[in-house]
Length: 260
Image (cartoon, rainbow, N blue to C red; front, side, top):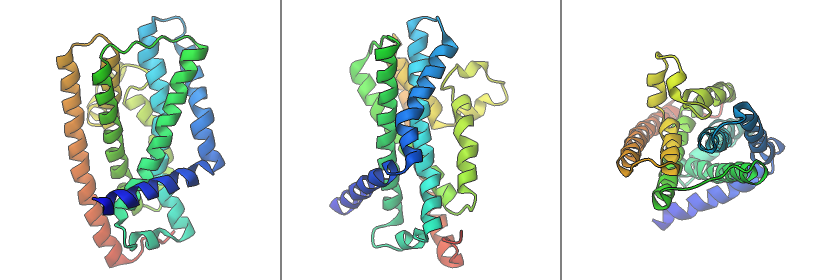
């Protein structure tokens, strides 16, 4: 176990230092959450506090978290390829999957910090009141949400690994997820043809789960959402592992993993 956890933490620690050294990532972590929070607050205006919590506080926080996750999925892979180091980390003694997961964990930690900054900003400056009805379930839900997003990010990262257009794909999926997964408004107002896509994406159920634990929702409904998110995470985890094996075979056969 130590052979996995030690390189995982070392990679995550290094990734956090490298990420925050970049001006663009600093903007994503420190400035972007405040922009999202302010914009969301003025869009909703004079609405009940519960709506502010569900669609402004959580919505803007998830937007900041998602931006960090997308960058850990696509931008870092593209950067390793650009610097010519992708082949090196792929054949390093530590498995590529552990290194990739460490990168994702590191940027997810920064994403959680950005989300916390957004929440604190709304609570302090806009007096949004947060009442956690189910504290223990909220902590469990938050842990499950982080795990689900890391698995989903791992899936995206493997999808981007063999693509020469990783950065374009990153920019393409970042903002649509805000709308498709209902970060800022209920999914029910979306066109009916796109709603099935919303329900097969983990971020949809992740933010729904946190909303339910912050509201006076019965425990059965919360546990049901937890179960759905857990099942989706397992499915995406299995798909990600299959993709990893496929990526490994293709990279070793074609030898073009680092071709920029």
